Structures are given as C-alpha cells and as structure tokens.
Image 1 (cartoon, rainbow, N blue to C red):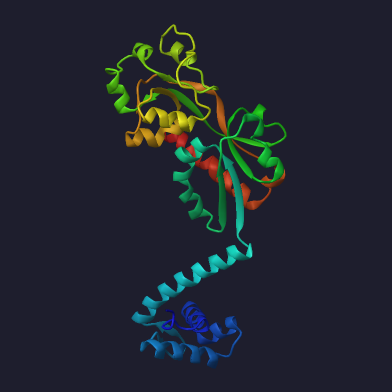
Image 2 (image 1 turned 90 degrees about the horizontal axis):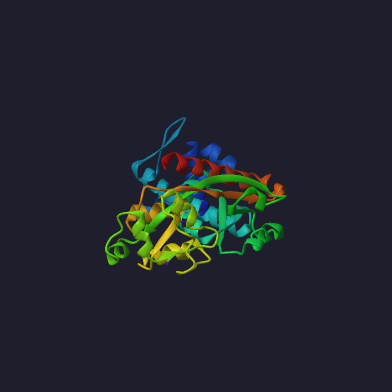
Amino acid sequence: MFRKLPSFHGLAAFEAVARYQSFAKAAEELCVTQSAVSHRIKTLEQQFGARFFVRNRNSVTLTAQGTFFLGAVIESLSTLESACSRLSGTRKVVKLSVGPAFARNWLVERLSSFYRLHGDVDLEVSAIKLAQTSKLGSLKTGEADVSIRYGTQADWPGFQCIELMRSEVFPVCSPGYKATIGGISSPKDLLRATLLRLPRQPWKPWFRAAGLSCEEPHQGPLFSDAALMLDAAAQRQGVALARSALVEHDLATGRLVRLFDVSIPTEFAYHAICQPAAARREEVASFIDWLVTSAQQNTSEM
C-alpha cells in the first residue's frame, strides 16, 4: 500500500534543501556529497513528474508544487520524529496524581494550553480517589511527580506545597430537580429538599451565612467524592453544596444551576504537592508554573 511513497533519503534531502535553500548546505547536514543530494531530488521529481525547485546561480527556491509538498513532508517527518522520541524514551514525562472531580471539571479542559507551551512534555494523569492517609503515597514511591489535592498545607509536611486556588461553596441542583419540588426561591425552601452531603464539607456554615438557624443534616445521600455528588445532583437526586472550582463547566452548560448568591469561603484550598527533588526537574517546574498561572487566571475570571 506504500508503493507510491518516495524513499526516506529523498524526503530528508528535499526538506533540507528547502530549509537551507542550498544543495551544498543540505549535503553538509546530511553528510553526503552535493551530487548525491541532487540525485535524490531528481529521483523525487521524476517519481511525481513534478518540479520542486528552481535552481538559480546562487540560490534555490521552491516552486508552487514544491511548497505544497513541503507542508506534507514536514508534518510527516515531525510525526515520525515524535513517535521515535517517545519509543526511545527521550521525551520528558510528568506523572500527575489528582482527584477525579478536579481532573474532570477543571484540569482536563485546560491541558491543551500546557501542551501548546510544552510540546516536548508528556503528562501521565492518574485521577483516582484516595483516602486522606494515602494521598502522599504515590509521591513517596515515585509513582507521581506532582499531586493536586484539596486540603491545607499542614496536611503535606516535608513536601513542597504550593497553593493553587481557594474555592467558595454554594448550593446547586439540576433544573429538573428544582422544578420537581415546586421551585426553590429562597434558602428556606432547602428545608424540604434532599441535601446531598460530603464528609469534609458541612452545610451548617452555609446555613448560617444564609440566615438559617439549622443544624447539620444527618440524613440524605452521603458521598465520598465530590464528583459523584455533583453527578447525583445532575441526575435530579437533590441539592449539592458545590465548590466553585468544580462546577464552572456544569453551570456554563446548564447541567447544574446555582440557587442563590450566598456563598462562603472554605478553610481548604487546592495545592500542587511534590518532593523537593522532583521540583528541581525542568519539566516538573514548568508544569507547576503552568498550574499556578492557570489558577491565577481562573481566580481573576471568577
């Protein structure tokens, strides 16, 4: 199926001549004679019945056909080079451990900007819900270079810990659930709603800010993970107290709606955590710098 493809030597010679606009400089780079380069170009032109270069006395310029072909050759050689680098292990890799809620709702949609800036770095993302006591394990064993976690700096003793962003929390639900219980127009209406719960995110501080004298709810679905709780809210199962960083996309798409303007800050924040030795690696430092910049931009837009 590849019988119509030219030789790799011919393509390399074509790309080098086009880049240098010189047969002599292309020959020097390829470590062959100038006549060998000329022969490879001639063979290439004969194969396609095309003329790729206009040869002047002191320069070489591409024809229209040559310009068209050059784009395809550069793209193909770049793809091949990238694959070879990955297979040979020469590409830089940053291994990231992150909670599934933060990964899905904040991180993933922003990663394209990191790749545009650092095309030579591959991220290996592990988005797994871990117990609080296990969140440092992957860093200690080297399974992760960087971990993004929700907590306080006191939770990560002995590690380099950089605060990325703080969140506010406020109630959200699906448009369908809001209609199901006859509408929710004031905080008091939450007293007849099913309140979805998360262990480290109590409702009582928000009740107080909203002017309600209510105790912490002791019934209703209890979730170990914020992503699961938000999914349950989207499926009309109740009202969730959501972190602002985790519901941007859901609010923008209408999957969830914010119920009131009342919000409260949390005592916790999202942090980038790593071993000091890992932070000295260029690719790890670049990724953390990108995280900090992206988080600052996100804060300024909120």
